[in-house]
Length: 341
Image (tube, rainbow, N blue to C red; front, side):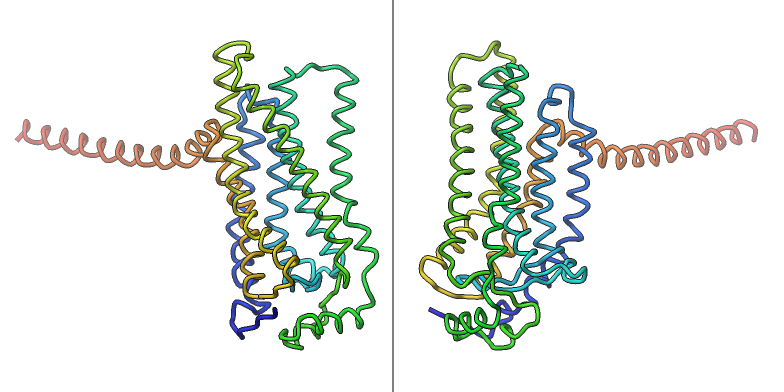
């Protein structure tokens, strides 16, 4: 089914009109979150600081990639489209922008996996440090990051001949205006999406399954009585709940659009308005993640409130103090004049 309504929601200007403006809001919030994690993480959270920072950077990069660096205009369910963003002005080829887009999503997933794996070792295994254990963990997480950068390369290096690809897209989606396909940046990544679907599907299932495994093991442990002390148990529980909220709320923003994209490939249903809305929604993931992180973790929340509210109240108290001192001086002066009149 091919649907084209001649609506502004379907145009390639729809996403940039929203996301390029959104980037001006995202940058200061992401920088604030990075600063708070690096410089305001308390000593009791020192073990998770850099994992938290890595997860934040990966999410922020995906955010800025979609909103400013390479705002995607994709024609799902075919693997074709082009981008509007800074990378276009820098001359980055469309095929590599597509590669970076898929890799950025995978990196965000691996960073979440790395955080859960770190918490699993700290909470369940008790952080038993040994050279062999640390080496094994480094190979495990490092291998996942290498995988995130390389798993999509087979399709990146094997695109179809572009004239044939464009004819294929026009045959598959006859309702798409010809000027979109004739755009000089239009790129067809694949005409047969079987390999692409399998590669992305395997990566998604693998990383998601590992995250669920670690999450479940931590929940089971915290539900038992294995914690060394009540204080340790409460700290671990509160932090894990905050972490779960931090991750689950942004994921909820992504699950819907990803589910819709999968639906388009399965049913071969094309609706560019819904494609654009889905990609726009995904671009809010990092912004929501940063905001939730600063809100749900008490040390970060207090640090932000202190940074902004302290300055406000300090100025207000200073003005009140000056005003009070002025009243006292005037009153004393009047009293002095009255006593000498």
